[in-house]
Length: 578
Image 1 (cartoon, rainbow, N blue to C red):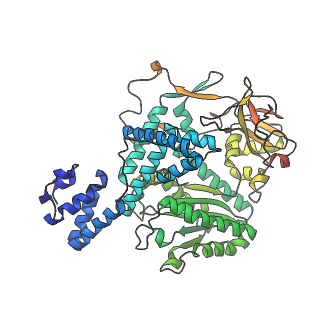
Image 2: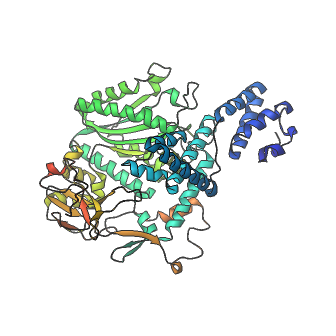
Image 3: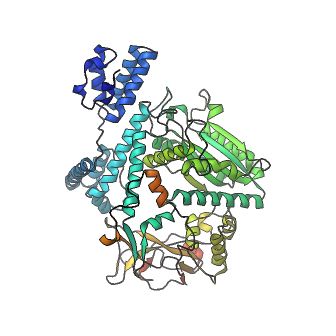
């Protein structure tokens, strides 16, 4: 094939002589006209590969499959102009639909547009979202990103040793969005009600959105789990769960599920059944789950679990049993669907074993010169692609299993100085030192259910004392805010200021932003320079039984911890200040 064929954008401009066989001109141009231009070159390469290694028949059958797969699909050019135009049209159509048929018709309209219903608290807020252009914009971006990616997966463009995990086009879009977000945040300030100003980039540096902070926090929690396990003579096992072959795009049995569907419809229900069985048999486990993709973007799970030695055989048997319940008799299932490895302390620690999985799924720290065995990619490039994959498909990469609340841990690190309550003080000292093991013990240990732990997050609705109303978001919903922590009869407020995000004054911005003229990696490195600490994020704490303030307690009375955990809610039409 000539270079002219690879470079065309207008199908009618391609000369017939460009093709391997002139008789295939109409067939190939018809196929390529139905897919985005970014697909043309890789598809033509694949066509040429089939033509030269097998036969002309196989090459044309490949393009016939493409025609069938992309039929009735709309690949929108994701420029802001096109997206805004489409969002405005959907707003108009939604308004008409809601007026004529109500909420049921609105939900049907969303289904026709292949958009998931919003997580609205009532019919009014759902309707408000359908009439909001700014709600539609991210929904459209998400829809077309996923449609593009799934097409690339099904057309065998996302594969090991090709465009691994995620297509290069989508990777570049994700990186461009991240860079644009950093540039916008570089021009924003957080201003408190006391007049304090903080750069938004500085806030970002100290948040878990910073890959360096995220990795450090994960490693610290894992290290604390391991210390706790050593102190209680528990052992560790490492499991790998792989989905049946029908969920893999590179299998002849493929059911064409998206990576998100595999996560939601296979792994999540599978783990729910495993957890229920473990709980029924009173097998207490704790640890971490990591989700990462195969080369064809299908997810698989790595699970590090700590448990009493006497329970190892039962836990292992339960995981294996459930892992093989679906299509367990297919070829290779026994060897590939479930794998385990006991962590031998004489050979290395559990955290050392799993550190590489965390690093290669976050930022590649400490593995800059290493390459992946499966794909041959450098770990740094692989981590970038994995993060883009998780972002596009909305997949949670890391999840803590058991243990204590990370929200309480983060709020405790905001406190400065000793506290009179011994429970809070012990937990504060543990958090301030980064001692996850001591924090676990203060909260009652890993066997204590989350609802029974001694310290819980304290959440409030924001209350306007001038009008006597609870503030709502733009869709008319009450939104609770983390205000601090609580234990029996005591609330400690860790967030004493109210912040508003606003643009910097014109004279504070420069023509050449420090993020300009840099690639995405350098921009990200600039924004993610400093680790988070309890010192540069603390405020003077306020500790008291609940008193009058600009917040309305989510649970109005504190008599004891049991009452506090009942989930009792106050009556909306008679709110009271506390």
